Image (tube, rainbow over all chains, first blue to last red; front, side):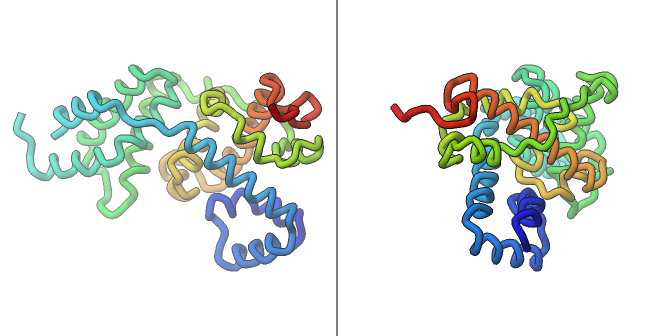
Length: 71
Length: 191
């Protein structure tokens, strides 16, 4: 695998959508390529950032209202 | 009103996915009151069509599908109203920062305000926003996201790819405007 192949598969690697063979190939490349390893960590960081930023709890009063309405 | 045990059990199970539905509704409508109305209606509809849910399949995806279909019916009228993404070309934030000397690149991410990240997500067109919500925020697989959205997996992947490019472009623009990076991409001098 070269850096271009790695870059093309990085999204699916971060999303855990590669098959086991592809994962092994990509991991081998990352171990030998600091630039791609940096890129991978960056994309995983962006994904975590989006998840944490958009996280929010359901308002408790609404949760209770819904529970009473439905059950 | 006395409910049957089966209906109550179904409702209880469905309510375990409330946070996912509320988060999704809030980011789609961008309004807490409208989000609550949307989620309530989605749950009422889910109970009404309980018989159409197949046991053992992904209830969270099924519920999300009901909620987002209601969103499109109620708030958009027609799916054709969804505006397409600006063509940002191949924008990769990591490469942009690297090429312009902003290293380490991840430091820039640590300085982004969560509210600005939310804003970047909420300004994506809804068809692209909902893919980011499912895959990045809720951790859905592409297959489950495809089920919830009623589209092929390839469509999930292409929408996600474009949405992420637009999202990263928005985050870059914000980083420049707020002085986190200079216009040419290099980081500001540390305070």
